Length: 281
Ligand code: AP5
Image 1 (cartoon, rainbow, N blue to C red):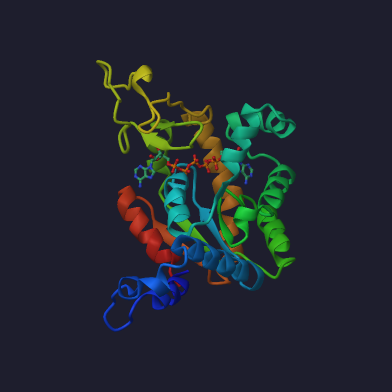
Image 2: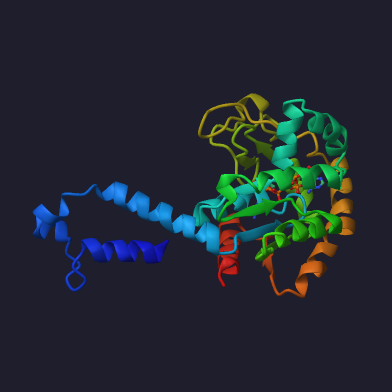
């Protein structure tokens, strides 16, 4: 959109002095509504991109607890493109007790993988929505080789393909502390950690454990919860699934030169710096 803004600025500013022309000739330049013109120009440009440019499709890849959910909102903000987390969608289905939710609930709780058929169906419908017209960020999908192939086929139907895979690399032994210390705000998906990202109101008991009643979302003050699959036992199964079923996806895409591995075993702010550079062409 940057070129569009420059074009618009040329219309309103004197290129040599950078001075706003509206100050120089109010008769000419105050006759239009600046905001409406910018909005219209952005809309036109978006339509052009949606019709003629391929969509920007980013896959956030990594084991449970590697920081996909932490990084995704930053990418959303940077690129104005939505995060599609199959985990969040499935958890919403479980809460709403939908048919999909009923099927997924038990397998998720013990750290297993939900069937390919269900998750592919969810993604197939979601990427048709209007907010995905310029692209989207996939978080937690694809997770098996057959999901990857189904995604390629879906995108191939419109001449598109995955443009970028950001693989967050964290050794297994670091993940248990991250997963077992995580607390989340259910409605927004905001993620906290007792050690690495504590909520402002957190209080500890005599043994250093967080007092559940003090675990509140910084923004809304609502209670935080722990996910039923964030246990050491379920994590073992989740990691098994990751290594056996998910890692082979990297090989599948490696030959296309779109896989970028990022060290995610560093401070979150530094991880974000690395992800930002990996997103550049
Ligand atoms: P899903 O919700 O996708 O979970 P996951 O992949 O296991 O990933 P997590 O959400 O646990 O971790 P994350 O990488 O987002 O880490 P976060 O940023 O929160 O899936 C859940 C389940 O749904 C699956 O097990 C499966 O059953 C089912 N499912 C989903 N998709 C499926 C699919 N496609 N096919 C089949 N089944 C599917 O970070 C973790 C913690 O660490 C946080 O507390 C955070 O504050 C902290 N942290 C983050 N970064 C750092 C850092 N750099 N340093 C220190 N701490 C950090």
